[in-house]
Image (cartoon, rainbow, N blue to C red; front, side, top):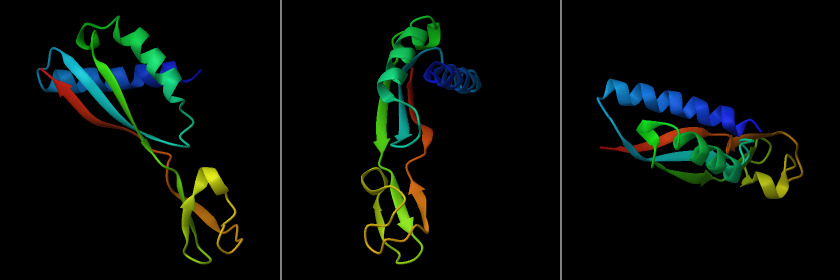
Length: 114
């Protein structure tokens, strides 16, 4: 479960931002998580609850996860389609000359603090 390591990385980032901005308490953190980022949202939430409870800055901070749909683009015909539904093979022309347009993101979008 690499989600715990991801949570520790997020916490370190939040502690740095809090220090730079003289923040003593964070109320919520909004993450944007790509659909094919390999991070499992339910595991991430469980790890967050455990780790945040042990950190004064984040003791009651809510983790909000926004999913970014995975979209693939076909270089052959220009179609954009759902990666999860169709994979690498373009549903419009059958080409495998495709690339992931979005869906691997893992970003801290917003921090609500006191």
